[in-house]
Length: 143
Image (cartoon, rainbow, N blue to C red; front, side, top):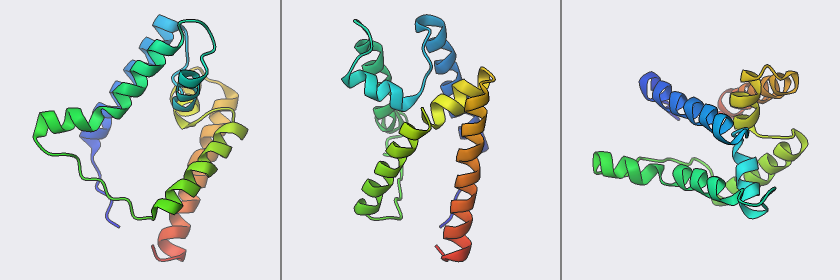
């Protein structure tokens, strides 16, 4: 599998995520963790808490539409695993989010920016596990 290195697109996207995180903290005093936002859209923590969550989720989902409007083509997406494996992976991620008290966006973007020791430990765990998984899949299993 070829993985293209896209530094400018990555820098632009990361900057937008960082800006959105800062604005959410400034305006609502909330951490921008994707799974917490998703869960709160279904079961709001406070009255009036659902609207901004749905707006963020709509923004996340509408990315391909914006790309299509800007370029005239849908982004190419290759998923090298079966639907069953994606579902299993989703459940595993859900377990990790539950046991880790948050997801990569909440810990990695917001928690580390706040110098949270728990988030730094969680992000190190995410990254080391990711590196080990990629190594095993690509070099041991030959994927």
